[in-house]
Amino acid sequence: MKPFAFARPAGVAEAVAAVAGDPAAVFLAGGTNLVDHLRLGVASPGLVVDVRTLTSGEVTGTGNGGLRIGAAVTNSELAAEPRVRARYPALAQALLAGASGQLRNMATTGGNPLQRTRCVYFQDVTMPCNKRERGSGCSAVGGYTRYHAILGVPPSPDPSAPGTCIATHPSDMAVALAALDAVVQVQGPGGTRAIPFTELHRLPGGEPAKDTVLEHGELITAIDLPPLPSRARSAYRKVRDRASYAFALVSVAAVLEVADGRIADARLAFGGVAHKPWRATQAEQALRGQPATDEIFRAAAEAELAEARPQPGLDGGNAFKVPLLTRTVVATLRALTPEAQT
Ligand SMILES: Cc1cc2nc3c(=O)[nH]c(=O)nc-3n(C[C@H](O)[C@H](O)[C@H](O)COP(=O)(O)OP(=O)(O)OC[C@H]3O[C@@H](n4cnc5c(N)ncnc54)[C@H](O)[C@@H]3O)c2cc1C
Ligand code: SF4
Image (cartoon, rainbow, N blue to C red; front, side):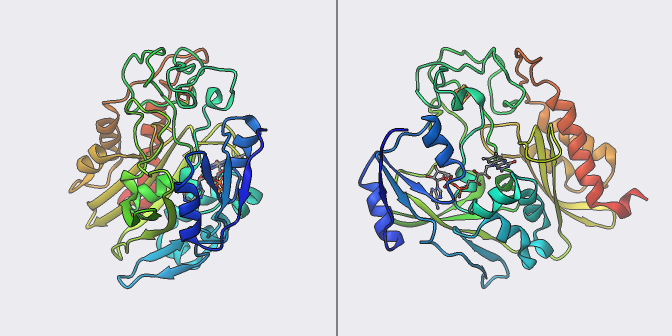
C-alpha cells in the first residue's frame, strides 16, 4: 500500500477545504470500500480525510412529511429505523439485502451510494481497465460479463476505445433511493447544492473514471426522502448467486400506487444492469393507468428492456439478465398488489 497522510478535521467545512485543495485527497467514511481499494492499489491517495463523525448521524423529519438521513447514519441503523421500515420498506429491504451485518454496521449513508464497481478487472490492477486508467482498455469486453451491464451500453463496445466501460453500479441502497426520488444534499468548496438522486450517478459517457456528477471536494452531508402518498407501497427484490453476501445479478425497487385495481402511479429502478441505478421510465409509462396484472407487468418490463444490449462473455455472457429481470419485475409488482391477484 502506498503511504498516505491522514487527517481528521474538526468540521465539514474544514474537511471539504482539505479535499478540495488537494487533487490527491479523498474522503473516508466507514472505509468498507475505500480501505479495500487502498490495500489492492486500486486507490492510492496522498491524503485521506476522515469524515465519519462530521456529518449528522440522525434521521430527522422534514417539514413536508419526509425524512432527512444524515450521511453518517450507518446502513444497519437506517434499516432498523422505524419510520423507514414503516414508510419506505423498499429502502429497508435494499439495505438488508446488502453485504453482511458487520459491514452494514460500518457502511454509511454517504459512502454506500459512492462505492465503486465490483468489476473484477477494476479490482485487479494487473488488468487493463479504463475506469482505473483511461486508455488502457476494457478487459470485461470479451471477458467475464456475468455481473456487467445490459442497459446504457452499445451493442458491440470497442474494448480498446478509452471511453468503453460496461461495469454495473453495485449498491442496493442506491436502487431504492432512485425509485424513491431521494435528493442528495452536498457541501462543496463553492457552497451547498441539492442533487436529485437519479442524477447523481452517470453513464460512462467517455469518462468511465467518473461514477457521479460530484466535483472533487464535494461531500454528501445528507440524503432526503420525500413523503410518499399514503396509498403508495414499495418493495425491493434482489436476485443473486448466493442467498446472502453477494452482489445483485439483477434487482428491482418499486413504488406503486393502485386504486380500484388500476395503477395510478409507478416508480421503478433496476440494479445490476447498468453503470448507474437504472430508473425504468419506459416501464413506468407502460404501467400508469393500466390494470395491475401479470401481463401488464411483463409488458412494462419488456418495454424497458427493448433497449437491452446483452454482452457475450467467456462465462456465457449476460443475456440471461433479460428474462431474469423481466420475471423479477413481475414478481416484485405482483407482491405489491395482492388484492389484484385474487
Ligand atoms: C464483502 C463485501 C460485500 C458487500 N456486499 C454488498 C452488497 O451486497 N450490496 C451493497 O450495496 N453493498 C455491498 N458492499 C459494499 C458496501 O455496502 C460499501 O462498501 C459501503 O456501503 C460503503 O460505505 P462506507 O461508508 O464504508 O464508504 P467508504 O468505503 O468510506 O467510502 C466509499 C467511497 O465514498 C466516498 N465517500 C464516503 N463518504 C462520503 C461522503 N459523505 N461524501 C462524499 N464522498 C464520500 C469515499 O471517498 C469513497 O470513495 C459489500 C462490501 C464488501 C466488502
Ligand atoms: S467494465 Fe469498466 S471497470 Fe470493468 S474492466 Fe471495463 S472499464 Fe474497467
